[in-house]
Amino acid sequence: MTATSTAPTVTAGQALAERGYEERAATYAAEIASLAPPRLLDGLLHTGTTVAEMPSGTGHFLRAYAAAGARCTVLVDSNRAMLATARPAVRGQHLHTVCSPIQNVQQAQTGPVGLVVIPNGALNQLAADLGCEGVLAGMSRVLAPGGLLLAQLVDEVGGCGFYDPRLPDGKWTIDRRMRGLHGEELVRMRRQRRHGDLVSIDLTLTAATGSVRYDHQVRIRLLGADGLRELLAAARLEVVHELDGDDDHLTELLMRPAGDVR
Image 1 (cartoon, one colour):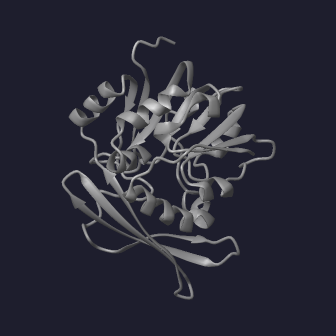
Image 2: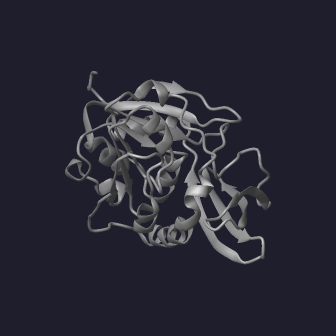
Image 3: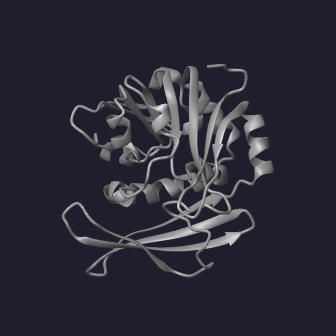
């Protein structure tokens, strides 16, 4: 597994978020282990597919890619600690990691890929921190001809691994229980606070002994239909298929560069 680095282009808010992800790197794979792959993913994967996850963390759906016979999985993230912790899900799975802000990534770093997966509401986080036009343009740059982008999107209905619109605002709840690297019991607490279309989410991970492993805040922007259309138009993308979210699933968008015909 190799890593390629580019000069970072980050805001002060991003820098603070990055420090939080460095603290979470050791437990992030356990935090996302129960996430279900996108429902549209099965129909997009086949033997030899090259898949890129952006932003990937430690890799969200590695087992699904390997099971479908994906030739290579490219993990793209701006947090070096997350990428250093990434491990193949099955024997023989090839991972290539690229450490770069998403808006700066180039095809020379990833190689041409057939599918870009934007997992678990990451697009909403990028919209809150960066705006998305440049981010989506960066993702589109790595696509091979006929390539597609698949995004899981947080909206007013579907929850995700770190946000649930059904929870009361400002109240701490137990988010999940899991085991750490050495078998210790860990508990993650979550509190979400909404201000218009912007949601701030506080996460605290503690051990059974009461020691705090991390405190981290993330932000997401809820993208309504009008805002999403404007975003896609600015990024010169068109929707191939949309799968609505429900209480258990995120909305899914399958996109391609405008004018590109498979």
